[in-house]
Image (cartoon, rainbow, N blue to C red; front, side, top):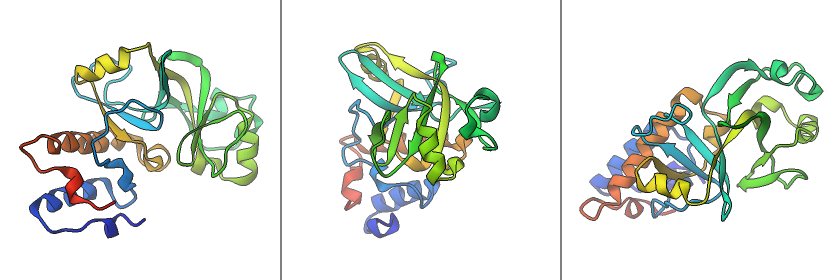
Length: 225
């Protein structure tokens, strides 16, 4: 669905929201602006760090969640590239030979374990769908199937380690205002400059939070999704 066809400018509130969309660009999926400003912790959501969060591992980060349950929550930081080429980080993985990509910092948990995010229209063995056509895997065997069909630079990101929270820990941090939540969007994982991802998504999440206040315009009223 074209983003601009979904915007119906009729009131000043619409104008404000349109400006926010311009900050993100036309490639942003409108689903990122949920009708409720959904704060549910679930796979497929982005966690956007609030500036009050000064933990060096998570300051100004965006985390994509891939699991949440009674045993805790897991995800991967998507916007911290490292100065390490993938071919150097994983020299024995022949599928990465000649691939011009950089390893990303995924989080402080198990940094020796590569985590893969990739786009694929179908379910794949040894991988878990996170949302839409985005999948996660800790098994490098999926790279062979991807390389046979795609240019890896367009559909793949590889991370060192991941982020993890014990039962109730993330909910507690959210109650303290450390995180904002938006629906995940593949554009920000695979196509955006990682240096801009946090600032753009934080501005949107902050605006949605403001518009959810009873005394302000309600964001959901501005759009017909």
